[in-house]
Length: 139
Image 1 (cartoon, rainbow, N blue to C red):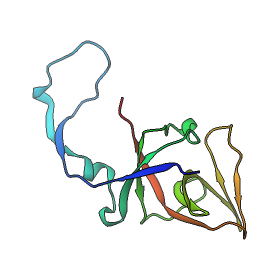
Image 2 (image 1 turned 180 degrees about the vertical axis):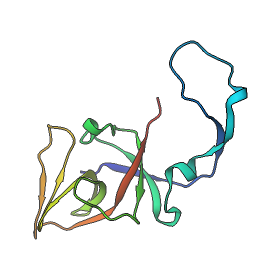
Image 3 (image 1 turned 90 degrees about the vertical axis):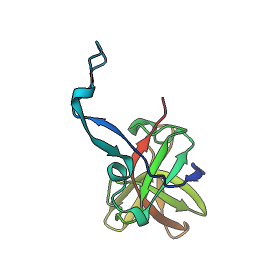
Image 4 (image 1 turned 120 degrees about the vertical axis):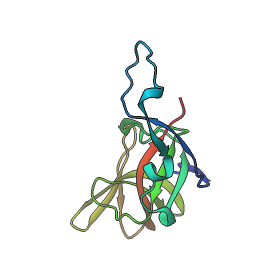
């Protein structure tokens, strides 16, 4: 379950942003199409005081495109709804899973058929720490 290995500090950075989409084909001159700089804080963070990042380990969320080594951007200001991908604490360990709720029933669902759903009951200590808003991967 320990799928979170580190918290990442918030950094401020802006990079050039071009106003057109790029095909993986013939290169073209880009300077004529330069827009305002792109600020990743603005792009990825809706609630700065409640947002943090964690590095993911494990393969339980691979079918939704979250892989080991990815950085998950987590927002604690968002309420988890049925279907949200959440960072939770289950019995003292962090885990990244899809949050499911139907009536009073709550369970955590992996996005990998190798892992069974985890039904949350009175025997579990469980808390949602936040909703995953983005996953960032280095190629």
